[in-house]
Amino acid sequence: AQSVTQLDSHVSVSEGTPVLLRCNYSSSYSPSLFWYVQHPNKGLQLLLKYTSAATLVKGINGFEAEFKKSETSFHLTKPSAHMSDAAEYFCVVSDRAGNTPLVFGKGTRLSVIA
Amino acid sequence: DTGVSQDPRHKITKRGQNVTFRCDPISEHNRLYWYRQTLGQGPEFLTYFQNEAQLEKSRLLSDRFSAERPKGSFSTLEIQRTEQGDSAMYLCASSRLQGAFQETQYFGPGTRLLVL
Image: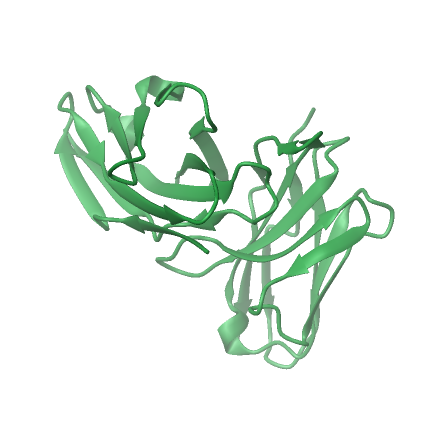
């Protein structure tokens, strides 16, 4: 069985300050982990994914995440928030072979204050 | 490559009516997924196809729901005798299985269903 816990339902940061969105996972398999972003009235867009290579994964728009097996965490970070980063972010787990469907967390809404 | 498309984007229906949604995946993607997202929640898996075969169905998929992918290309999701609890965003995603590993799932814009 797989599950994801996003530790914050809402995070608010000031423009130009760092972003940290926290995610813990549980998986019976060697996991693949993803972060997707959903802007209002737009589809889900992949930010980054971890499959089995480097534990520090770089994604689009300056986001990155670090896979920590010992802590079962996959937190998303960005050094400096931009207004356009305001959106809903989902941490997602799957097995590496894709034989189980994606399991989404409940999401973290990121607000960026000018 | 135009991405995953879904039709319609919005649907309002009365309780008890049947509705059908269509998903066109990225061409040559052999896997197609349906998810449902309710307000304030992450998407939840409903079912998926590999080519035309439906390989898995979630317990969320009641008898009123049926999905098809007749030629391994587009897919339809039908809900019969809709209920107010069916109101949600229905998302489609596609991916390519190459060898033993699945590539990234790409999502469509979704169909938002409102049952009155």
